Image (cartoon, one colour):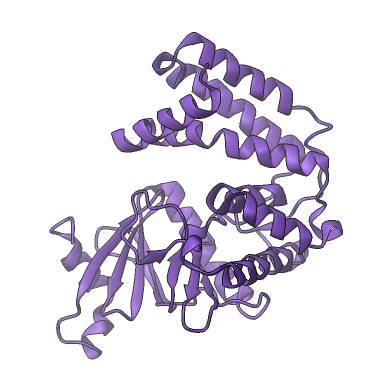
Length: 311
């Protein structure tokens, strides 16, 4: 279970589970960026936020989950119970979706998973086409139908990454050599231009890597799309970049052939931003690790930075 006090806190939060099981089996399956994830009796998933920002995101996910259901062609979590635990932390419970994560990313995750390479070429191609279609469906959601969803257009996104660079200078650059720091500065200088960040904001998942995609091996189809707490109206290149980061260039080729370029506004600016988002993933890992006192994330991020920016 991890923290010995977790069981009593969770039991207090989900008292109605005793009607289902006298002694519910609770397993701490993951501790991600934002939440601790518990599986209860192989039937439910409980999410407890790690910090206040994660709590805000979980509130958002609860609020929009019912809206999303039926508006895209894959299942999403439907929360059946949410509120404060006895320690005052907001938490939320949904009935577990069937399937396994289909991802190449194994870092820090205990959930059952398969890699796309475990599918044959026809199955993998069908899967990539399916994900391309889902991304297109997400982009079609009308921004005026979901009030209160975060919005971040080109100028706001540029400011976000300028702030990220300032933070990197303060907290990261002391951990890398000077030439690598200069390479990072050059990357940001080349990309953070208004003409490159000219796009029409669209609804995005915000963390659309394979680690949030569930796959039914028997049915050979996507069986769920989870973790919507980072959703917003912003740059569709962000979702694309997460998928390419996880699934690679084979996925990219199939995606680009099977996606409506007009809806997702795929052009040279879109591709350049996507490349940038992928290249700075290690920087984000390091800063997250420093902020959350996680040496493993710092180590992982530094290795990625060296690979992409080292000389």
